[in-house]
Structures are given as structure tokens and as C-alpha cells.
Image 1 (cartoon, each protein chain N blue to C red):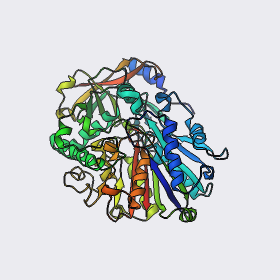
Image 2: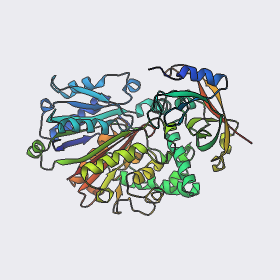
Image 3: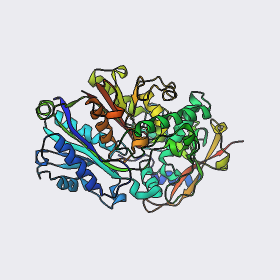
Image 4: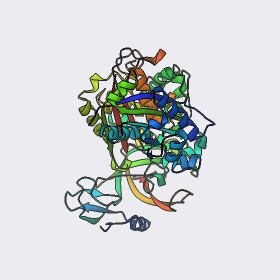
Length: 388
Length: 134
């Protein structure tokens, strides 16, 4: 495999947008290409992420339209990826694999989504389509519901009183809103306190509104190239040191859902390829779709032992200035979660952190960054390790 | 390859109150709902086995913001069957507003109910239900 690097990165502000999926993607795609000192015609392929275009706009087969919107040549194939919330990370991984393999020298990857556009009822229904249709969706399971069941099981398994666990979960939201308030691209740029979380409406017991990420619109894109080419084109290429991806079946086959089997395998692959371990990571963007999800992720990625990560935010360890800064962008919780774009925005944040371009939320001296994205009800996890 | 018990057969079994699972001839694992190959060892030689319909509630939630077409609140639960598999369904006969952590680990009995299909699904379907065993 050839060494692969990331050049330009770009994301829209996440939130509620009146723009079409294609307009949002064209904006970030062109921006990322320009920041790479390249032209659209230099792109040899488009790895395009979108989950719910059929419901958001009645649009399938969006990749070739994104391709022409961006002005890519006919010779550059455009393919749509769909891995639920992990969509864009999976698209970027596959772009990096094919550039690494020598099939392409330069490619653009990312995603776009108009999740807020659908409204809460349809968005909740369509997100639930990522649960198994015959045996799970029929029970009326929702995504907050999946992680709510994980939260109850976590409390039971580790013998933590639920109100105690909920308070620590609330501290995750408080921390990510604190970070998000410093991110001009974030959907929710306001600080909250524990009372905000514990006083908010119940969505799926025990998860309250502020335990949950918002439905967001947005897009993000990155340009990927063979490393020598990248060094020629930009001052600070960021290198892909390791990647991993794994799949696991429907939730009912996973048993102990406090542990994500796909994550444990994906991160094992990524650490092995990079030749590093969790102690070597300086900054991480991980999948905090719900507060309990961040707790599960800091354990699954090896930063904490299983059952010991629940109070990391309360102790300030994962906050800016702490020993292991988690989600300096504000995470899915505050930055927002346009599902098909989320992974590319996580990569964008880590790339900017490693280039020391993150302003007020810069993690000092960050050299190694990790991206962790989970798709569906724990069925897909994709990890990417980046180095300056 | 012949699907050992199809989804339609599984649905018909549920409507008769029968919980027909599969037993892997290679490793002995019990599969429910039925599937193509053994989830543990990949074995494809599977025989049918009648399950007790008894299990323990391992975790649950009360859905209060429901997908389009559903009327909240209702309880979704994961149950570990006596024979080993985990299943997902609805806990019934319990007031959604009266749930506590005391539900965790409770013995339950399986049944099923018919859920109306919506615009996006493939039609009406039976889903597992759980009742507390006193």
C-alpha cells in the first residue's frame, strides 16, 4: 500500500439549511479542492456519502449529480456510500484504500445530508430504518431507544445507580456544548449545564433531549492523494496512519450492547496498522450521538477500561485542557449530526487540529488524531488514525 | 441453499403461538429468530427446535418520541431466552410511566402481536411481546 494523505478539508456550518443536498456538497467539495491547490478536473473519483436523500428530496443516485455539480470529468466515477451514521467515514476509507492501492492518485470524498429538513416524526422513522426491519423496527425501536437500552444495561452491569450514571452522562453533554460554543460551524453553539440536561424532556428513558444529538443539515468533504503528490501540493498534508472497519449484525444478535463488537475489531485493525495504542492518541473525534454513546466509545477505543469511562467528563479529563480531549468540535452532540456528512466533518476537525488551525478549541501539540464513527444500531464502525 | 425457516414461516409460527428456532448441528447454538447460517460458527446444517417461550428481561426503554405512525409511550425491551438467544420486542401489561430499574432481570413469557405496516414497510408483521411472569 502506498502512503496516503489528506489535503484540503471543508464543511458547511451544521444546522438547519435551505440549501439542497447538492448545493451543500458542491460548496464544500469545491472548497476542499481549492484548498488542495487543485481543480475539479484533477479529481479521479468521487466517494459520495448520503443516507436519506430519497426521503429528504425524493432523490436517489445522487452521486453522479454531485459529480457534475462539482465539475468532475466524465472519467471520474462517482459512487454513493450508505453506512448509516458512519457513511462518510466509510466513503473516505474506501477512497484512501483505492488511492493506497494505486487505482487513483487523487480523489474527493465526503457526504451531505438534510436530516433537519424531514422534521422529527419522519426523521425518527427514517433513522429507525437502520434498525433491522423485520425484527426490530416492528417493535417501534428508535435510535435514542437503542442507546437508552444500552444506558440501562450499563447501569445494571456496572452496578451504578441510574441517577448517578445520568448525572455523569449529563456532564458529557455539558462538555461537548462547551466545545461546540467555540466552533463557528457547530449547530448548537451555546453552553449548557447539568440542570439543562436533567430538566429536558424525556425522549427514550433514561435519555433526555439534551442527551441526544440534533437532526442537522450539512455537508463535509476532503481531498485524498498519494503522499508524495500531497507533499508537492500543500504545506501540511495530514497522513492516514491506520484505518479499520468492522460489521456486526442486528442489535438482537449482539447481546451485551454496552460493548460494540464492531468498534473493538475496527480499532484493533487501525491501531495495528498505525503501530500505536490508545496512549499515543492526542485528540479524538468520536461517535457521541447520545451521551451514553461517548462513554461506550471512550471505553471501546481503549482510553478507559470497560465500566470505568462513565465519569471521565465529570472529572474534566476529556474536556479541552484535559488529558485526553474528546470531541473538541462539540461532537455530534453540539456540532450536529447530518448523518451522511458526519464522518467527513470528524475528519475535517482532526485534520485542522493536527494543522493547529482550530483556534480557541485547539488541542495544544496534537500530533496524532483518531476518528471514530458508528453506523446503525452498532452494526458498522469505521476508525481512521491521522498524523501530522 | 434452502432457507431453513423463512420469515413467512416464522410469522405463521408466531401466529400459532409457536416459537420455532434453529439448532446448529455443528456447534449446538440455538438461533431465534431463524436465519440462514449459525451466527456462532457459520454452520449451515440447521435443524428446527421448539423453544420454551421463557426468558429474562435484560434491558428496556420507554419510547416517548416515536417514529411517524407510532403512538408513544411504549416499552421496547431486549430479552435473553432460556435457550440463549437475545430478542427484541415490546413489554406489554406494564404501564410505560411506571417502569423502574426493578424490571431488569425479571422473568418474562413470550407472545406476539400484529403490527400494522406503514408506507415504507413490506406490510403487516407480527412482533414479539413480553409479559412479566408473576
